[in-house]
Length: 112
Image (cartoon, rainbow, N blue to C red):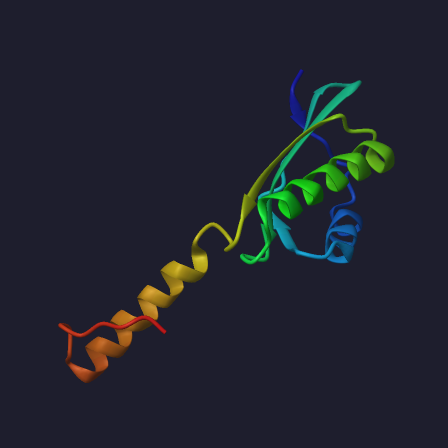
């Protein structure tokens, strides 16, 4: 029966991510026990926007190898992002709207 795996060491994976040049962070990390013998992992990987496609692909390869070796998880799905699910963009838009309301200049919203 499918369910959440309860013995995954998130901090250990995050520590490894931080050692990889061009990798910044991870989030949205569900670990699932498909069967007692099969565990699946997926997560969002935040990379530097300046990374080349080749560098980001190499980071994914290194992470999949690490997860297989250290956690014995062979099914890993990694989604690459340059921002955390756009949360920074939304936050900046919210700040711009608040500034515009405070200055009563709704026609001139700027992002910083």
